[in-house]
Image (cartoon, rainbow, N blue to C red; front, side):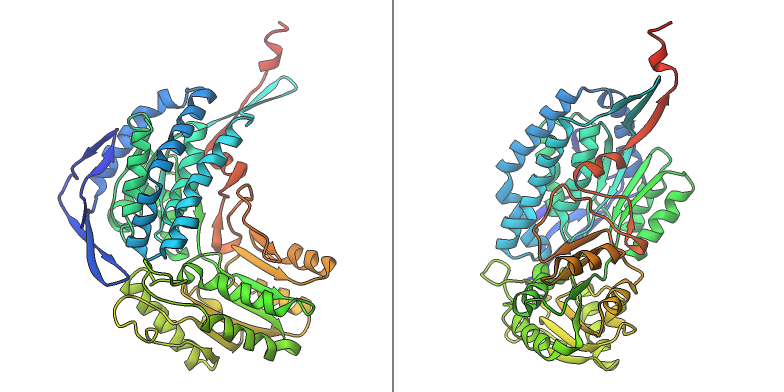
Length: 478
């Protein structure tokens, strides 16, 4: 059993201000697999003070010094790669194959991407006689979720380090093991004391203290829209920058000419990946009414072929993260049935043969209308809702009829139609015909899916302030 009862502050592993522990549950077997300490405002104060003290020196480091630091982090990460993957599987139930090939891999990717960007990033631009300077914003507070844990830590920490910021991180208390491994990697890489700090805890105890702290200049939060609202409220009194990546209810528009066998299967399998616990999952499948019977048949087959089981085995998906989350998903599946959607496959309860663990049946609903709860609320589980449409413009209208705007998907053969749909979806990303991941593509949402962007060069700007030095260019001429 893992015992992680200390926090990483000012380059050392320290005891919490007030001892208070939390058991961590393995979602695959519902057994206690570790224990962490829950921090409080006093721990946040200590971490922020360390970050504040380190900022003066770290913000003035050279590009070359920060490149060398990031390269050391990548080297240390690769040494601990298997440890990171194992931690993710144990803490949140990601299948070992997914943890190895995607969950752990994406952490390395963000640091490697930051290295590539930093090499040529322009921090200063002369416009006439005015020098435009981009300089690190200061101390950053990061609050990250459990569903893609190292992805969300790395996509914030890597660009923040690259531009010269210092930081305090609160990983999810539900899946905290990967955060400890992450801190150990940064420590081994020689991140200067105080530059990176980690305090475990829950939202009320640590998240709220980070959001409201007067010495934090930016808070970056990834999680539910409900929690994001509370972060913004807490941050408002100190007028800090607030960056948020929140919920989604992404439309997947299948055009009339799409190859339905591949398009529907890809869409269903995408939702099922990570047990449906991805904010950008294409959970609303919009299909032409004239091809609905075909779409439903393929969707049923894709869902029923999805294997569920022990994440250390060969199953495609493992459990969802917790009992609380399992109960929420069950409630929404039952709500879909109550509101009249057609249950194509799956449904309430655990899959056959799985009596322990927070496993959910891969579920598909058809006959869904966009006013139903399962079409409005983010289920965050392996549940696909199929909605019908008659015209492309109707499909776009349905796709945009949501408080969210994180991602959208469109599949078909006609290039003009694909581009037409992509240009009209009100989402931060649109994926066309299952295109692969782009590490340089900005990630973030419209509307209640948040504000600001992560990933790639756009992420650097989130951690920079802009200064205009007027008359700079005229000095030499005088």
